Length: 198
Image (cartoon, rainbow, N blue to C red; front, side):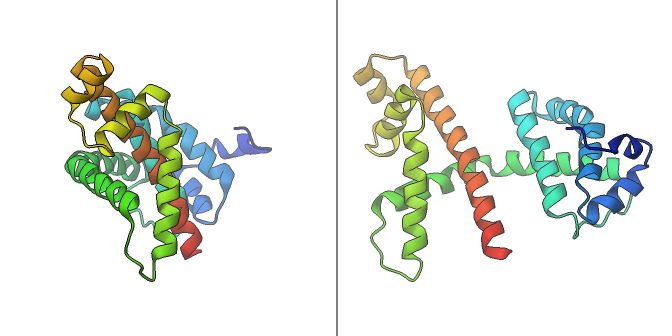
């Protein structure tokens, strides 16, 4: 995105751009983004060997850079900070991917059953509605397979037999559904945090 006068910023050092970023300067953020996006994508891809995961990781780096700009303290340089951020987020995703899947599944189960009347009942109901909406937004075949797996507790083989599909196809569809929902609900959770803490 081009901003009026942004050409002047091209000559600024990373240190100068970061100082401007911390004051909320969107032009400085845009210049930093354009300056490092491709090298960070390449760096993330070399670690994950997956272009989609690399894009998600780098997007998370820049999202955190903007959201936490006033709290960030850079002890080396901006490039080093960004590369280190890619490294940490990549490790975090690898280390917690299975835990996240289990946690996400438990949320789905809780949302489906939601029977306890607590002080947080309203928020829980809202979360359940959001989850159901995102599930409903999945492609038809993917949604059908996902619901048979998560709501009706059928095995992948049972689903494959029922729908006349290869078991590998069922596994891939369930995996893709979890990935899509995790990304979408991650964004929602992030916005919820911002709203509640602004």
